[in-house]
Amino acid sequence: MEYGAHLPLIEFESAPRTLAEICAYARRAAALGYRFLCANDHMLFTRPWLDGPTALAAALEASADMTIATTVALPVIRGPLQTAKMLVSLDRLSGGRLVAGVGPGSSQRDYAAVGVPFEERWKRFDEAVRALRSLLRQDADRFTGRFYSTDGHVVEPRPIRPDGAPLWLASWGSAAGLRRVAELGDGWLASGYNTTPPAFAGGLAVLSAQLAAAGRAPGTCPNAIATMWLYVTETRRHADRVLTEVLAPLLSRPVDALRGLALPIGSAEQCAERITAFADAGAERVFVWPLADELRQLEAFRERVVPLVA
Image 1 (cartoon, one colour):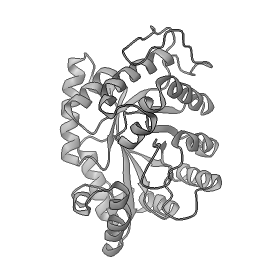
Image 2 (cartoon, one colour):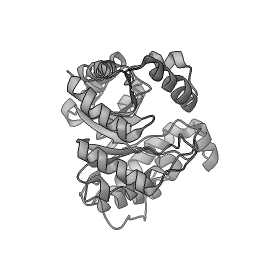
Image 3 (cartoon, rainbow, N blue to C red):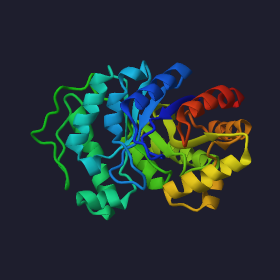
């Protein structure tokens, strides 16, 4: 099991995030042995949210040798050409350390804000991924679809790697989503607050079948579980308060629904049991996102939880 840390893009308190805080977080994550530094992408949200790719670029030097990952970038919202330009810039500035996670996004507000019909998101996303491949790979064929065309477009400078950064596709685990991963993706990004260990294991079984149907071996498609909300505390009351007062309003979800998930919120032993369950289900990487006291939570997870993971 490898571990990654999401940049603290959300402003839970009144004071806005600063560059110094973002870089301090990245340095601490690197020093603690986290292997990935991740940034999510939203236009509009229930809380103030720093632009993910911008924050990731700002933290590159502080990230040492960590792999950086967009988890996920939104090529339908941003546009394939703009997304490709952003991904190439991150890849080159990081020295080729980028994993490009992409997804359609689930926010109707984001789609309304950019004037794209929400009901078209999956058709557009399929084309957007193919357009990204065309823009990022050397000697790739031009792509022309119903919504997007790369004809006449060349992104320069070129990516460091001939095929560009690997594209990991986001899916909550539906059969259609996993078929898309098998056909178009270099990896699968699941969502920590939209899956459970049994659901993830079932998704991997479906993905294995889809990979075989596409003529690919299962080992050619790595996986990770992103946006794994984290809060380690030995006090049950504190854990309940984080669920009730922080996470439920943030996600606009009932608390009972969140309690039914396997998020690492609770004692170190409880968190380790939940991470172990995901490891047993086949998860190869987990990307945690502290819900408060970010530096202390990064430390608590690495020093008190990870040693207990079977």
